[in-house]
Image (cartoon, helix red, strand yellow):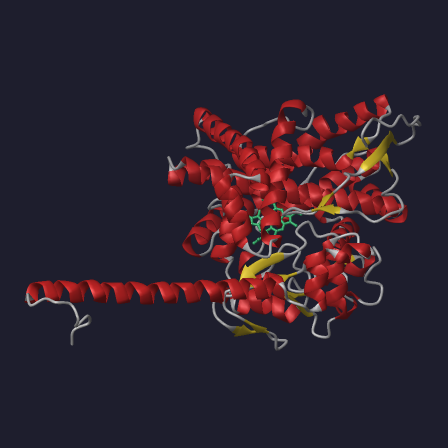
Length: 522
Ligand code: HEM
């Protein structure tokens, strides 16, 4: 059949040619129409998600939760507490959020393979964390997890190498810093101090290098600010209703994406310096984590950069966050502080310093207090996975393929169903039975995550927290300043929980008095 029969031609070759052109034209038109339809459907879906009219989505989109709650996590905790199955949906984010322990076990263990980090999550954090352990699945994750476990899950490494580094930092840097501060009588931001302290510890422990950041804040301040900014801006990407917004901004190098790029330049320069110094100092004989990676993957500096950044995030921000909220709670609960001191005097000896990891293990009340503090203020307040194939959670919630599933340790720590009617009280003794610490089911307390991707730095982190607590509480009286002394903390957006206004305190050596001279800007 001729497609254009009216054409006056008798040449079969020309006819064939015309037919081909017409066919191509038709094909092109059809493809255009199909593409057009696909775009219309995509836009309709996008608009639908933007305009979900349910009360929760409207409250999220208009940020009207902030009229009643100090923090987004408090609003989520409120919603989850009131949900019959402890699961809610934020449709505009295509996110199912759960505080149901059975669901958590299902996601993190039973159906682990169906709930990976996923490509969308890797894209959100890709510029900051690259292919580091927090941001990959499959073989890449297994390899890094194995390397990290060799280093971190080894009890004797924690007991000797890490314990010595941490206690050397406390004795020679943290304590002198606080003494100096008391002499000057100025307000101290304890959160900033803990960030510098944990940065030094993780660099010495994981990279075998000593930045001496704790005492000298100047040059490293730019790095710290860049690191916090990159964490904040990366986390904010995940709160956008559509990824196209941040992707377009990144393409055009605009606004928050421009600032992220700038912050990443500073972070990359520091990571490069760490790798360079490790190479210069030699790595083949060394037992630190970076040397182990260098011995295995040799020259891939981009990969090594991702390892460095991921371990800085793992070791600096989480521990600093845990210590900040711990000292915040102790400031409000002097009775807990006294009990910690009494136990330390009993186990270690009244005027004696902490000498071993074994001594720390005998401090059951302190162990209970650190766990209780992270129950109320987990350093990682929530954690998201992506659902690969349609699934049904144990509570009957349907989860669609390609949507996000989030478990929420912050909300779980405030559930009556798990902790009883005094769940909002700071009560370390709930963790003790006949004076001995009793661990909880990790799926009800997923502060260190649980299942296959459980935190491998848990023992190091607890050792660090307990060492700092014993040393500082026995030597100093630490007083919270307003507004934290009477209000609740406000958190900055970021991958780990950070107090928006720091932790301003006055420090006094026990048995001495001093006058308060508030410094500017606190
Ligand atoms: C109080 C301090 C800490 C808390 C609350 C904490 C919590 C967590 C959580 C919730 C995860 C899961 C993150 C995710 O998959 O997105 C995690 C993973 C991890 N943490 Fe920690 N962490 C702490 C300290 C540390 C320290 C000090 C190190 C290293 C020295 C460390 C190393 C790691 C590593 C390597 C992973 C990845 C595990 C994996 O993906 O299989 N953590 N941590």
